[in-house]
Image (cartoon, rainbow, N blue to C red; front, side, top):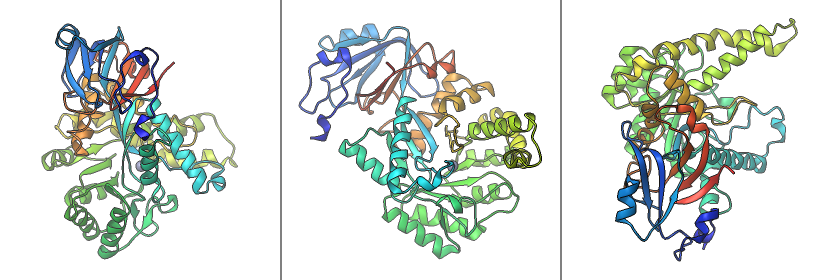
Length: 425
Ligand SMILES: [Zn+2]
């Protein structure tokens, strides 16, 4: 009966409802349509959504209206229709940067995560991969969504993730493990408890790698042995080469990757989730603090100076290399990874803007947030494109995204499996 709970959209209320509380089908039209495959841009286009919430057909408005004469038509006018976006690197339960951290017990963390989920939908994000949140949080949030207690995007998650004892993230709720068998055991535990992916962290702003090669190899072997993919947080050398050699499916950040390494990743089918915005925002934050001047007692500014030694070269590395690396053919996925207090949450729009600023086209940028993630998540038959047979996860934005990536900020409506889950009004 939970399927009966739906948000009704003004004009659509007139549509005939099926027994499950979905519309009997609808033709959505717009001046522009991006399928999400990285190349296709249709004009005067339409998407036909059937009563199961799946995409029935895609084509020109004229053809679709003629082919499905009984379906109701909703014409959005001068908009772009595109697949719901996927943020491949979020932390829905990351409350650690809140200044009143002490207030966050399990209930509060759940409310916080629910708010993140709501924010995601309000930005057109219909799928997320959460790469470590407090144990069981994402599993329960997904269940709450299934039960209709709250609206959440599709959630793929890695449960709490793992680092070495004292490693990166150990004070942010990441499980500390050492040695091949402890790693294998923790992977088994997290998968037992519902993890869809495995997440390992192995570098932290220094050239000292955290896990050993044998530990990384064991992590990948154990994940793949039980049919799960694995992601690694690695930003520096030699941790990056070790992670590539170990065979991780996605390299998170990869801040100081070399061109040859990215070519290796492309050849191995390892995807890159650069999360450039997180580094850019931190760079800007430090720069602002330093430029504002400070006295010797200002701990935040003192920290900013220390951090700047990392974030400035990081910012430059992304700016200088992104396009070169993209051109190797490596699969790039959009991830926001924003955990800084008071920074814009889930700034996937900014990540797409940076990609375009650094040299790729808006249509290519959209692919990194739609069909590329679907491929990496093995959800190509579910989401990631406006294509017959897939779930009708679709966003409607004012303007022409193919020409101006900033148009993704002008969100009108967001659909998941054909249901309206967010409207901007
Ligand atoms: Zn992260």
